Image (cartoon, rainbow over all chains, first blue to last red):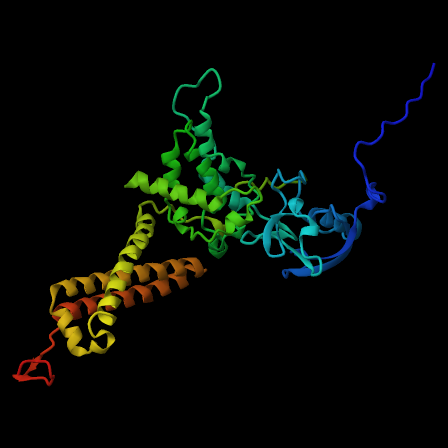
Length: 260
Length: 153
């Protein structure tokens, strides 16, 4: 016995002409990408690409289209492509952002969309920079839990209020958008940079951590928090919306109140 | 012959990014704190100075050599002006020092600019302090008082 059931009627009334993958509006974009290949030339140049993209596409999709269909030599980092891994921070239209979180439709498509590597770190090829100096500063603030007490047999408990104290700075994905947007870091690359301070903040204000004093002493360096000029570039650049400048100010205050 | 594979680069830092020796000590913290505290005090001192000189009494029309001489005969205004001189000079010097640190890219440039800055600061502070304390509105040279309408004959 076979019974045929009709598909249940749609609960959402769609106006005629909407729906289906082909219905997403398309538009033309002009991508202007900074290219650098030390094996060919010491000079970086601009390359222009004209693409037809969809309304749901991000800058990363445009870069993929270039790499997969037009010029396979274009180099950039990306891993998860969904704003979590922090690999594809780049300077898009002069602002540091994640290529995978920037929708093309949100940019001004009447003008070329410029894509450059993040500033202040040595470029290796095209949009790829050497992140080692950035990670070195991160390592120096000891971004791990240091607890002098006995090893508990269960997890280390913490009240919701204590957890809330450093909640904002737990969101960092180490994409370097903040550090490479900081004009003080651009000068000579000596400054620890916002990202290292944010990750120190995450442990300094953690009630379970015992090494806050050590971290404050490290950031009391001549290249530490006191080089921050509160220009707020970092807070604007952060793709996770961390109040970076505020975190830096809180670390400054913590150093001051410890010393005085 | 075996092919050698370069060891992973992790931990190898481009030399220009390496921080030369941690400068422990609290100098930068004290400089940062000084900027904020001196700034607050300077706002009071400078607006007090402007108000007394430009608004009180005859206001701006009263300012002449005699007016300044009269102010510096009073220890209150001596201390006021001395504090203003020192705080303003140190505040300004520290500000320019910060700008040099931020904008000079080479250590040698930095050193030169700072030498010029500190020399200028020392000259102005010493000269200013000297003037405030040794100012004599009615100098007598070789037994002859210099001309000036406000000096007792």
